[in-house]
Image 1 (cartoon, rainbow, N blue to C red):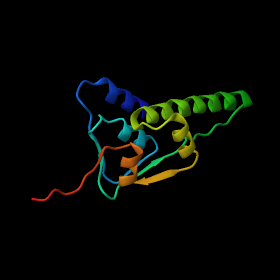
Image 2 (cartoon, one colour):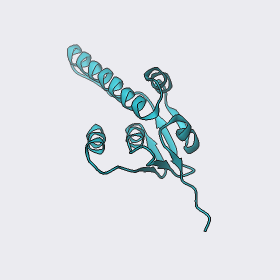
Image 3 (cartoon, rainbow, N blue to C red):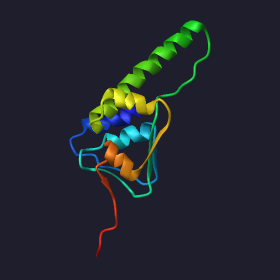
Image 4 (cartoon, one colour):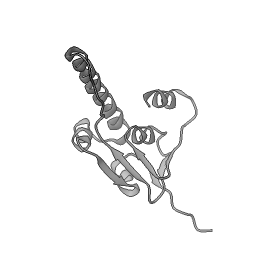
Length: 122
């Protein structure tokens, strides 16, 4: 997911993002990482952010290494979300401790998207 995010930030053309159903976890990060004013969702879409999850097995040292990497990833993802939403790192941290679900209008208010797409009158 971070490879896609890095590419979105690297390329010259603006990258528009649209949530058509569900953008959860890394999907929410990618949605938020679109170009400003080009991030949108359909009216009944849902967005969910949460802390990263992972598993580890093996020797205790290997488990510690994996846990440290997950914590580094958590900080990196929260920094990314904070930079795109205008929320503080602490707000992202607090909201992401458990699954944090948002409707499209709530995702807009949160700063993850810029527009809820509605059918335009003919």
